[in-house]
Amino acid sequence: MTVKIFDTPEVQNFLKAVSGFDEQGGSHRAKQIMHRLLSDLYRLIDDFDVTPEEYWSTVSLLNALGGQTQFGLLSPGLGFDHYLDMRQDAIDAEAKRNGGTPRTIEGPLYVAGAPEAEGFARMDDGQDPDGETMWLTGQVRDVDGKPVVGAKVEIWHADSKGGYSFFDKTQSEYNLRRTIVTDAQGRYTARSIIPSGYGVPEGAPTDQVLKALGRHGQRPAHIHFFISAPGHRHLTTQINLAGDPYTFDDFAFATREELVIPANRIEDPAEIARRELDGPFSEVVFDVELARTEAPELQVRHKRPRALEDAEDQASQLAGTAEV
Image (cartoon, rainbow, N blue to C red; front, side, top):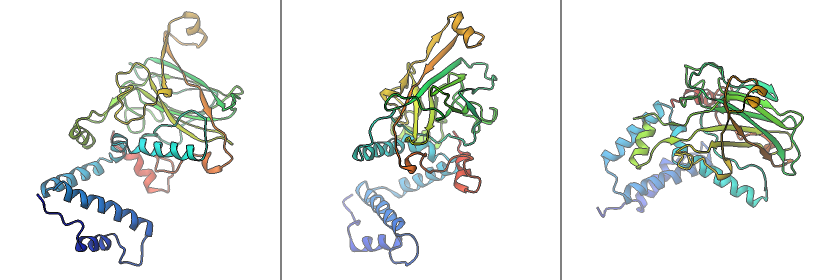
């Protein structure tokens, strides 16, 4: 079809009205962003000759995404989370903020309030019959190699079936979620289980979008971290376990070469006994480098709705309703 109306005065004036530029109230920034968003979408309808059937089927899909609170799951799948990281990397480079372990995406499954321990914590509740024991350890250092004592290392990951506690109601409270404060050598250690990778729910709205693009919705086995210490830049990152078939084919685009870590199988009886374990285990060593900063706003994680983080904030509470 050759009919295009986007550039007509009638449509341009209509866009200004829809975006609220004719009204006194509201946020000017919100009006600007909405005008740009609507302009891009209106032009898309023109350029691709989007039919009413296609438009309304998309509305239905968006309703389903919202109804199942899956926008937080689709967001990394469409690259938004990684794109924000790319922008932040570029902002850091322009500001000459160099050094430190690379960031990568947070994902939608953090839950505030995990139990805190000094130096060592057991993260699993011992109830996963398929769980392979993992010994997760590392040292937090500054860019000069000096140990960072008292750093907070927040860790969360999936169980052997790919489920996360809180969102997976079959798991105990805060299972596989802990905050560990580094010891006098800047070290943290956790006994846990090797997490499984997982996929978006089959047939769910996120899965429908990805399949329309010819893509899968699989994530490799991975472990999430928030790491913070006074005088240092807050780090949001995650490691992918080497050898997973999706390590370099992550639908969430979270893989970075520096963050692919092996899980080394340990069968030596002396090492098993030293850790007071009952049998062979896999050891994962992830050392972290924190860059220094005097800026208070860079020493804390950015604000966003997170499950249980703010009981007074409706968005924070809604963050805990995701179906994944």
